[in-house]
Length: 312
Image (tube, rainbow, N blue to C red; front, side, top):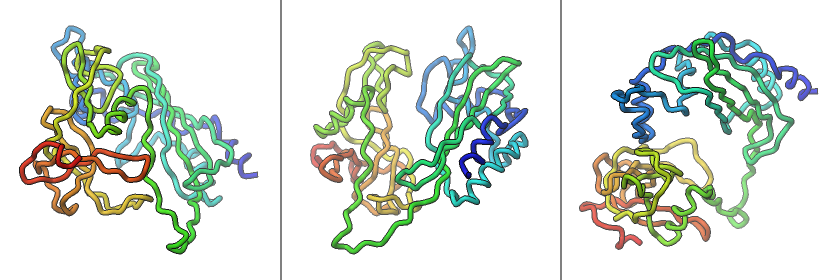
């Protein structure tokens, strides 16, 4: 049986004797923190007596092989993927990862790693199609001490065959539902009231977005909210052409908008053709309802900035 063939790979190496291509270094830490908007001094302030540490969530970054890859990758992992391809599970999507941190990494640390094929799931049916989840576990080491573990899970699947339906019987696809949890529920309550709420640390007063359980400036746990005025500028943007997703109609522009208050928000840009969006373009906040359940903040291009009232 196919599943018995697949599970025979469990416990076999996915990578052996891997070495990080670069030591832990301040430049990569800085790039990471800038991309994430993380200003925690533990990662950025080299004048601290203990120096800086790498953000724990960078654990996988130090093991990546880049475009040239790693020679540590095992033949067993390639054989497993080939067996799935031969069985018709030719598509792949990354689903999730889990990380465990055992000690901080500091500039100068040299990284080594080993990976194992931890598990292959029975056949599962998803909206994408039927397939098998493959989980690999990577143990990361420095100086002979294990510093963390990274589990990465993919789905190898056979894409669902979509049939053509007549216009009379086709139901318009809906936007994905937002994931609401205890950390971001207040944000979504604000959106429901057509307000864009930012968190404000009650310790140091720093504003933050997206919503987080603690302040990334001082580490404080207390916070209240501030409503964004609504005007901002396009800090950066991408135009999405491919792949198409249900309920989305490419091409469309997605921007990183810098609000007047200094925080940055990712949202669609409306009011101009996708190919007219530019860095520095003034925009104003609005809210768009996509169906009876989903309303999202969007930003409309404007010649002269302005507030959000006119677009609500």
